[in-house]
Length: 421
Image 1: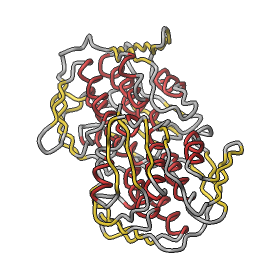
Image 2 (image 1 turned 120 degrees about the horizontal axis):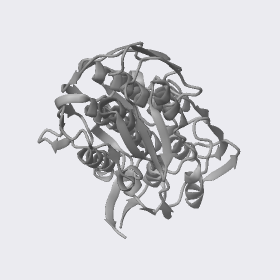
Image 3 (image 1 turned 45 degrees about the vertical axis):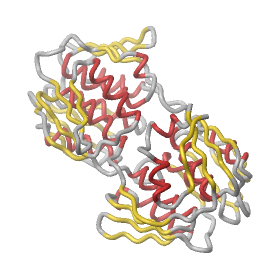
């Protein structure tokens, strides 16, 4: 086991490049099942979740290769491995996004057996909307022994209406519908940039999807899709994490390879707190200031504040004098990191779906444990400004979503290192 050790109270300065979006790469990788031939996908981060998804695709007959420029080459050939349709528990249990192979497998091979997914423990995340959407297209689905078993003689276009926003559910139904007969409409589709990126990828491969970025998607079924070259969008959550790293240390950091239009909620809130944020093309410069103001934050579906930025903002608000309130509308139980921040001296009170954060003069380094990916990021950010040493344990969660996080923070001036327990 490894841990991260941080000596706090160091100001960050310099430049760093943001990787491609993990949450866009994973469903796009799964969608390669639908394509005949080889796809070359640039910007895919070299992290554990990507490695896990690669193993799943290999189990399903795909050929995966990491190229010298960091791109992933993924090959699926029509007529090969059509009898491979099982995504096993030992892999799917490691991350929730692996459920994204369900739609492509069903559409391409007419059969899918996918274990119920695992991933971060951040509250209930049922897959019933995925199942209802695929059943509307004509799938027969049974659940037994922890697996979703789906079959279909033929998938036919129809209207799918989600009772609530579901990012991965939208990805699954959209991926299944691109090869279905006729036209499918998805009402109340998720609008997140990662969903849009999947739609653009499929369109470039030969699909016919319209309404991208809107709450109603229209998919006209086509006969086949082909391998392509594609570049993943920048990771807005990684970008937001580094933005807060600069803000919390009162630093001066410029981020390269960003999409400011995907970060509107984060940018607006940082400015409201008192951080200087300057956008120039595909770069963002974040400069901390000497005086910050409290604020209230509510997580919402895109274009609102991402739930994946909640823990990072909580760490920042722990250092802002006065009272701030964070309300979690996506995963109401996603406050496990609050207890660890309290170990560092933070003043946080949980009331239902809200956290009341009262800023303290300083945080103190101690031993903390990571409960999920973004909670880990929040604890690392807190460690950057805490007095003394912070030891962050169970960092395998961090490695699921951040590539070489400690090395990149160190290059910006942080006193941070990875070491054995």
